[in-house]
Length: 302
Image (cartoon, rainbow, N blue to C red; front, side, top):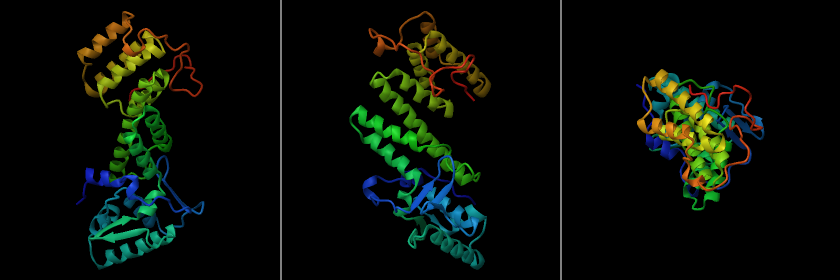
């Protein structure tokens, strides 16, 4: 029987930096966002068996540790017996050998986990360390710098090559953290009156997860009315309506519809920008050069 991931696993996944080894092993680098790769001295790790690689990324997804029975069941669908125990020992030996660290996997109270040294070498650890710095920072500029590191570290889906249930659950957790970072960074940009960057990061969040909340769609409509024009804001509103109808069989909240009418009428919705000059040029948040090709959809909700 599969054991579901818990919030405890996620919280233990990436403890505060003070509790970790400060310097990662210089010869080890683990990439999980966008691709699954382990480099030792700049070269791909030699696993000798796919099971050793699977065990590495599995334990990386459960930093709180897993029991031998859970590992056997989740990775290979095996019951705990003499034969499976031998397979586990061989795989564990191969994993430690591939990483070049004899103590890369530790056991405590019947739970196996990767060492802090291994976690420090992973991009997922860097991701959460930057997220923690952002959440602790007092000044907007400090939060912005840390959140930028978060966004820069997230190079794509977590372990995209793995289609197992444990990988999908971890993938969803990390994506949710990334989306939260995008919305938080958008708020920081808004606080600093950097409207274009606020739109760009909020668009990024809504593209990944259009379900995060209708208030974020309202916010984007408001921001677009400043950085683009009322037509762009209404276009997003219309796409949002179609998204609700097609995916949720629902309609927008009355507050959203009222906001759309206010935008249509030409009202300046953004209180922060009232009395200030709007950005002089209009930039598209979905292209590198900021120029929207003719007919390009500003935000495609899927």
